[in-house]
Length: 348
Image 1 (tube, rainbow, N blue to C red):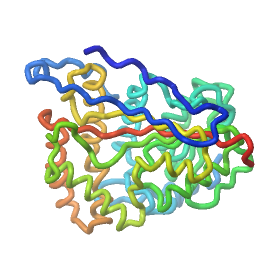
Image 2: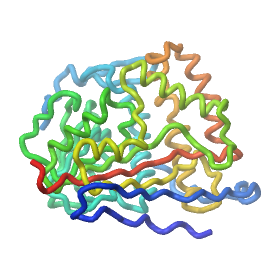
Image 3: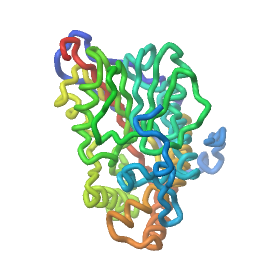
Image 4: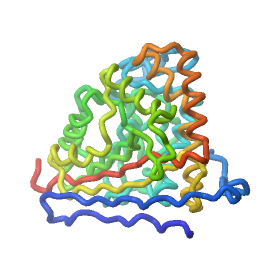
C-alpha cells in the first residue's frame, strides 16, 4: 500500500458564518509479522520578554532527578531539562512528518505578518516558521527560558505566564498552539483570550493529541497498562486543577469563543511500527521514541504530585506501560487533532 498523499488544505468558505468541517483518517492496515521482523524504515535517527531573565527565573526547580521551570512554579508538570528538550525537538519533527513537511494547515500556514506561538518550548516551530516566512514578525512565549540564543532576526522569545493578563498591544494575524493538553486550568478561556488578541480575519490553530490511546481491532484492552496510564493522566490532571480537556471538543471551544470557518482534521500516531503502510510505520517509530522513550518525564511529576505515588511506583508503572507501547501485537494509536478557525472580519 503506497504512502498516503499529503493532507488536503480544506477550509470553510471565507463567507461562512458558522458550521465546521471534519476530516478523519482511515483505519491503518497492520504489518504482518515477517515483514515487521525485516523492517528497515526507521531511517534517520529522530534526531525581549514580558519578564526579564532574572536569576529567579533561571533558578530551576529540581525534583526526583528532573528539572522544572521556576516562573509560576508547579503550573507545568513536564520537565525542562536537556532530556525533555531533546524530546520536544523530536516531537516537532514528528508533527512536521505527520503533515508531510507542513508546519500548519490553516491559510496562515504561510504568509502571516505577525505570529504568536503559545507554549513555544524549545522554539522549534517558531524558528522554522520564522525561517520560512522572513517577512513575518514571530513571537514565541513559554514559562521556561530554554530556547536557543541564535535565532532568525524576525523571531523573539518571551518568558511569560499566559494564564495572567496578555499585555501585547499589537494584535496578531496567526496564533499557534501545540500540545497544550493539561497545561491550563481553563483552556476554553485561553482560546477566548487568543480570539481577543487576533486581528479580524486572523487565525488560531491548535494541534494536539487526544487521550486515551485507541485501537480499531480491540488489541488495546481496557485493563492494559497503557489504558490505565491514560486514566491516571485524567485523574492526575483533575487533582492538580489542570484538567485534560478533551481534544474532541476543541472545535466547540473555538465556536464558543466566536471563531468561524472552523476546520477539524484528524491524523493518527501509531504507538510503534505495527502498521504496514510505510508512512504510518515511520510515524510509529518516531512516536515510540517520543512518547515511550520520554514516558518517565511525561509521568513522574504528574503522578507523584497528582496521585500521591512515590517515584519508584511511578517508574515501575511506566516500565509496564512502555511494554504495551512497544508491543507490535497491540495495534494502538494516538488520535492527533488539527483544529483551526478564523476571527470574523466584523469582529473587533
